[in-house]
Image 1 (cartoon, rainbow, N blue to C red):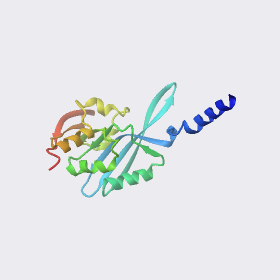
Image 2: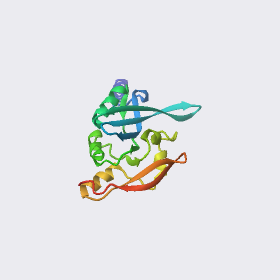
Image 3: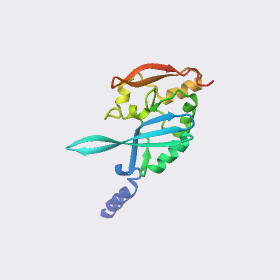
Image 4: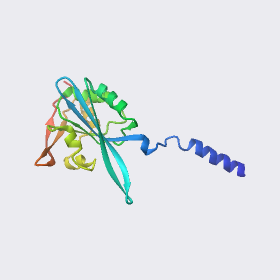
Length: 188
């Protein structure tokens, strides 16, 4: 009987931790900023780093930036720059400082199908100023009237419906939601 118990414990130890990842070995990306200049793109990742202090967990943030001629090139450079495995399951928002329709098409290539439930915001400000505004990575979500997820934009594109994207900005040193931008029919 003891042999059976030892075999079961041994098998649980070997096969029971397949999905286990050490928190120190992954880079949890919570917000992404995208800026487009005349000839290149700038991609910014916000990594949240949970730190235990005095029986509480506080978040610290680290920012990674890259420039490239395409979003794919920027993402490749960032993945090379970040030593840890990039973990996008906790992606909350993408803030874009442009209303270029081609940018929405390029987002399809950046993320797997499972990572399409993040919120999309436009901003006239620098996106790093927006995503680094608060010490709470979910703060951006709390200021918008309603969330427009990327999944909803993709559904609207397939159904040939218009998409309204919230615009957020910094005014009088406060982060505010102030209107929606109609992208028009993003299929044309």
